[in-house]
Length: 357
Image (cartoon, rainbow, N blue to C red; front, side, top):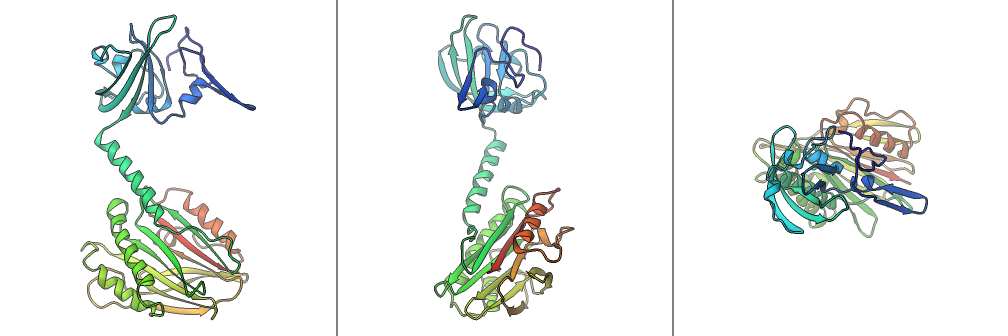
């Protein structure tokens, strides 16, 4: 940034033409640090000369001038002299980034008097279609997460934890679980649709609804493979012809101390206890494919301390996914969580963990 010698400079190195500080208890903030916390772009300039006095971080990002602030507002706002000559105005305009590209903005301007002359303060927001699309995706991500059940960590007989890491903001993976017969039976599923982003997320939402109907509206004791057959039949006209989905559903009967599963294309899951951990291979046809379906089934006894992690391909195909022998449920969860948030992911990553206490 070019040096400004006539105004006081805060610790961040970016200048403010006035003193601004907030203190609470033992914490104190410089004015420039406070303004850098705003998500909106904020610019201050001299009304008479157009000389830029300050830009917060959001403005430096918007205009692409993080290292070298413009000397005059005309460099980013060419029509600034044509703005309404009132103390307060709201309008739209085309602004210019440092690389020469144009960005439409909605701006609010206000004029403040100062001993050195009038100062214009402008707050600007990007209203380009790309920005609107990004905001829509962020909102869709928040809505998608609302569909997912939370963790269960205070139960006396069962602990449930999940990991949900979309490759982008929204995911082609989903999961769910529900209780039957007053808490004696836990049923659940994990779904992994081919692809990423909005197309995969839309198809995943359809499958999420179908799986919920399969477990909440169809007979509770219906075999898991029959539920998958029903989901596949209902999904045939709702999944794109060039796409497919993998899924695995399970049912844990706590009174019988037994868990069963049925796979539609998810090839494995983790089963562990105090003695060790193994990757259980399963098989089964994918959802959304034409022709006869054949789903892989299995079951095993549940003992105190046993745990399971049902995983999407984003985990199963990652190097180093397999935890070390002798890991506890919590240690295994931490291992998978660290894996999900380290390195460069290539796929959505979802895990649903069950720990029987």
